[in-house]
Length: 291
Image (cartoon, rainbow, N blue to C red):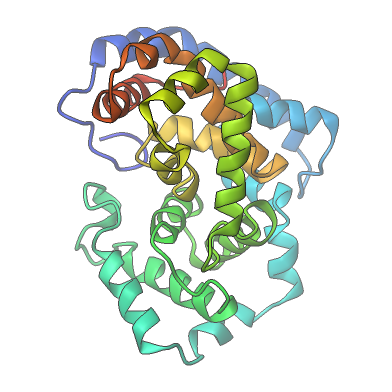
């Protein structure tokens, strides 16, 4: 089990991971020391060129909750609207939406020890967050994918109301219209991805076009789930560090990086199943794409 409560997969390469961490641990320790000096005596993280540089290099897990709450604006919103979250929980919600949420709760990280059936499970907190958000933003209500995002936020933040405000900050400011009924924001992002690949990786773009694939087929999960269950959780959290600071453009940068890293194998793929397998296998062994 990793530090976030996820069981290691059966094919987890402990040898490769150990080699990676033997050198990376020193980098993490150095970053933690530098973040500690920045946060010492400060009750709030203020955006600056220095903080942006630090965020891009990764926020230490011990400081992640505080940093996310500050750089996203979630803490400011929470303080501005005291009692609002509780009022959402006491509001009425359409039964169809509520049932959709309840159905997905048990599907959320079933392999994670903190989302089990124990009395201190996070399931009730997750349900409350999703119900509150559906009431707060009826334009979106609830759609699949939000359960994973809210679930991972809970694993990092631990407490219910701050996790709700982080979800709100992410949906409203960082991912506009990604989860709207027509998913217009997502479609626009996928068109942008196609154009970026055409410019930066023209040979790969031509290959994908020749196979007859739409970028939406393999990128929808990337963008909707924000790389959850696509990349290792350590990598996802590094991506989210920058997402909270810089917005959705970071998702496109990661997509381009993934395609570039696996370009040779992708070019060797003769059809859609082979291409998907290349991405699945390659992504699972990556520890971070942002070092």
